[in-house]
Image (cartoon, rainbow, N blue to C red; front, side, top):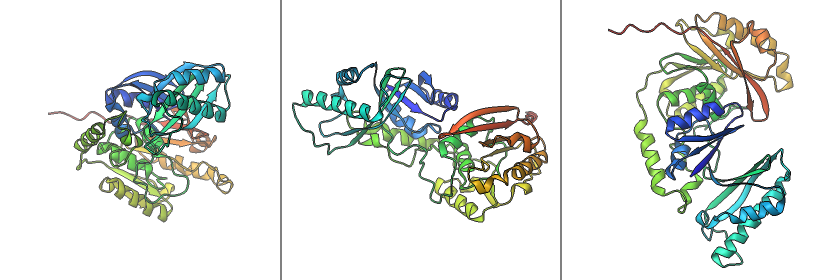
Length: 380
């Protein structure tokens, strides 16, 4: 089987590395998605273990279509009876088209649905289907006239880990936070501080990684109801594997600060729900008060972008304070994501690397200020 894993634009290499580490062969990398091969159990393991993808799609078919007639006929050729039982509730949840002759999402959705129904009529010898069973949402992408059909076995997006019991306004998504951490050389034996922690997403994702807590271990997935596609045993085994990998006593020094006491309170609640409250110290503190006596730590953060008009006039001073605080951190590295174009100007130095990343539809930059590596420890 082949699986499609969508991700944030600019994070394809991170997701590819994660899939390979999970033991699967990557077959294609495209803008915003990675395709890989595996058996049926890969659907369960990918949903439970992958930190940087939004969902897992089972690749049902791929073909070229230059007309709606071709789209209909090629879709109808797919052996849908191998995936959809007679009572299946199926629909095209999303259709997108890029640089293709066929570009109307609503028409694409209608024609694919109609083609599947016609195939089902011929297979089950029925004219009407109750659609009273499990749900099978489909996602269609057409790029340069190549149609790819995927069946969504995740359901609610994978950034919904289940620990965000107390949100704050405009939090960074869990999958993006995990991706940003993976782009840095941070390991749990190094200090990590987020001085704009908000609801605690970056510190929590770091702590879950440190404790080897699989992000999907405690939630349900749509594919668990698909007896014809992914065996129930595969989901049980994936969760058992995840549970066995947890390191309950992992030691790490992770800290989250925010000037808003309400955000700090919410972050503590979320960390408790995620099972990592023992790994993170949250505190009400302004960025200008950021300091730490130890060397070789990491700042990984998502400061205000100035998306709201009332924030913009304060951005120069805020980023100046970020630069001054970082200057006082001896031999630290700093990584921050922002859409603010003048970030480097007011921080007071040019980033060693700058990576363009799309946070939803918003173009942002991941500025990377690299500190020196700590000396290797003497080994007796």
